[in-house]
Every structure is written in structure tokens, then in C-alpha cells.
Image 1 (cartoon, rainbow, N blue to C red):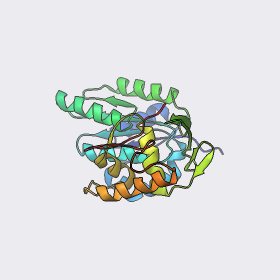
Image 2: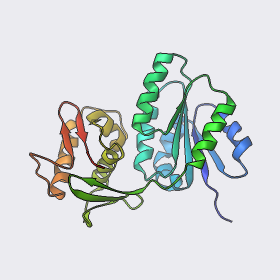
Image 3: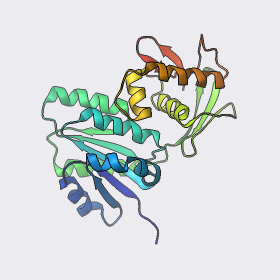
Image 4: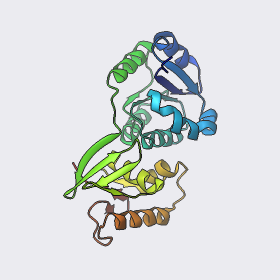
Length: 238
């Protein structure tokens, strides 16, 4: 029997799970986890489950920063599906701030309170129609052709493999996923290390320094990973 693709829900409530089971159970497996369950099973889920997940839905009323970290972690694990962020926050200003931050961090769509079940279902159906492989791509950075294969965690520069560690690959992959945008130390740390930011900028700098050397870059005048002074780093390309 062929395993079905999955819809993965992260929510403290079961209403969304029952809604999706009712409408999508014939085609997809539907799984739901509370925050504490995700924390316990995170590594297994990221490494062995997300390959069949077409859509991740994160529903939140609070702990917004923690859920943003989850979005970033998912994006780093070769995720080929989409992420829908549903907020139950009622304050309009907060909704606007959350939407900008969620989309910038890698969510594909943001729904704000109040939303009906019909609106949620319409968004889910639309995102499922758009599912495609996002794990392999090619881009030009400062005159060099970079090929990224997130499925096997390999990066090539002009056809030559860059032998990056797991952490170095995650850093480069995240910067490329947010091409032409300055990524702060805080955002990069929480995405790659999956922990609350502890102002460990020297650790990040050390990894970037080693990555630049492996790329044959001038560490004093870098071309591929650029410094954004006072903020973090950016990769510019097309």
C-alpha cells in the first residue's frame, strides 16, 4: 500500500484537526501536535516525516516567537511543501506585525482572526494545488553559479562541491532562502540552532569565516556572504 501524503498541524486545539479530517482524510493523512509534543518529537519529525508532508499549518494564540522558530526550522529541512500560519490574535496592529514577520520568515500564507472554516479550507486547497518541489535550485552570486540540493544537503559552486558541515550548510541554505534580504544574527541563530537567541554572534562569525575560506572568498572583502554591519548577513544573487 502506497503511503499517503500528509497534512501536519501544530495547534493547542483540536478543532482544526477535526475540520481537516472531515474534508481531506480520503486523500491525506492528517496529524496534529501540541507545542510540547512537537518539542519532544521535533528531530524525528523534521528528519523522517516532512518528506511526505505537503502542508504545515501552525495555529497560534500566543508564543508567536516560538512558532516563528518552528517555521525557520522547517524551511531548513528540505521542505518541499507549504506553510500556513493561522493567528487567533484579535488586535489589528499585532496581526499586521505578525503577518510581515511570518511571511519574511518563510510562511507562505497568513490568516488572521476572525476567519471562517470556509476561508481556512479555501486557503488549504489553494496551497495544496501549488505544492511543488522547492528543494533544488540554481542561482548566480557575484558571477559564480551556485547549485543547491537541499535533499542531500549539497552545495556546488561552478560545478565544484563545497564541503560544508551540517551547520554551515544550514546557514548558507537559510541565507539563500532569504536572498537579497538582510538576515539578522538573531534570526539566523534561531533558525539554524533552533534555540532562543543568546547573543552568540562570535559563534556565527566563526562559521561564516570558515565558509568564506571554503568558497575561496576574500574574508576581508567578501563577495558571496556579505556583511550587513550592525545587523547580520546577506546573500545577493539572482
